[in-house]
Length: 490
Image (cartoon, rainbow, N blue to C red):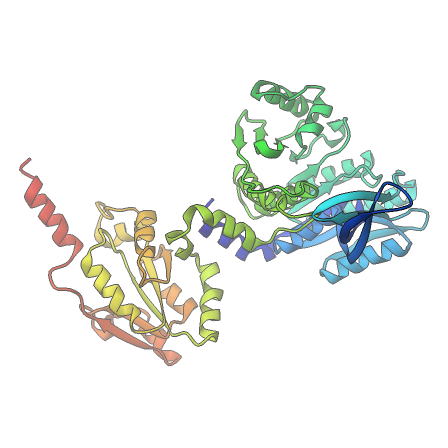
């Protein structure tokens, strides 16, 4: 995926509704300094300087989904205790729907306390409940899932083996979602993956895949063998095995296998990275990406997550910035309309005067560059609407363009005088002009004011049209004719 695709995806994630079902817990972090040894025992003394509570377990999946901009509901069971109330308070703080989080007075809400000093976890203290749900609570959970699963675009099961995801709850979730064609993504636990039968995708790590398949994964052949065993036992459509520093491997029931190398630059902590993978996959799939594209996106997010200490969220901007590393210059200027519209609105609020122009710009030449430089000088920021290949063919004939739209976009975006490039498929840029509302609409001097598309729109809110003179004798047609003249005899 490129930056433009990723920006467009995250500009629309508010339309993505996700249901997360699983084991909830509080992650407590005690941050401090460890500069001395206790006189009471040969252990470090940690002077705590900061305390922090985070959503853990399935809650970390929920938090990641919310951070990516999705609409999230969580379905689970917690205890009627102080930790349970603090957990619900954390969800409330992040504006997450907890109407399906049921309280069991006989259950203890899980809390994991980590003591961290000098970026190292020194000890972890677990206070948790692992009992399976009472029958009445299990039935309440299943009834809610059966009724409401159809309201979401994706259902995510986050299994931490703490008792909420019983075989009955898992079966109810898969059945309810499958009945209405909603994908079910599961982060599994244990060795018996058959209880996840019928799911769309499982995301075990290598150790979990080895335990479930009974096959030690040491090379590509054993990896494929383990994946085959799991998929046969579960009837999965897809299986994504995360392999730490070796990246991810996506297996599909069609026989397709895709190996995705890691993108992590520095690893501090792998805890919670699986939750980030699951959340990013859910957003990608619910947004209409293919399974492979979603896995590649999740791989980028995982690389960011392991560079942080403890269970952490990954933001859309972090993912966009990481994707952009391969396209540092021109690519960052190429935007979709969904992304560009709020950007231009923000620039206007900062007092910037927006100039818009458009064209095919096939075989970029000095005349184009001079024109664009003049247009840029009319204001503070220049947006270029670029005709797509299909649009150029309709305007100029079947033999054009000579350069495809992606190459033309990158060439233009590399020019300092251009701030943003947006490719459009219509015959005219009227839709773009109406959406962006530029202060100045620039067109070539060969146009008359009456012939400028969008003039009435721009002038309706006080903008103006400027006709910019071209450099004489510089045109794509002249270049083509010169090439034919010089080389046609050969």
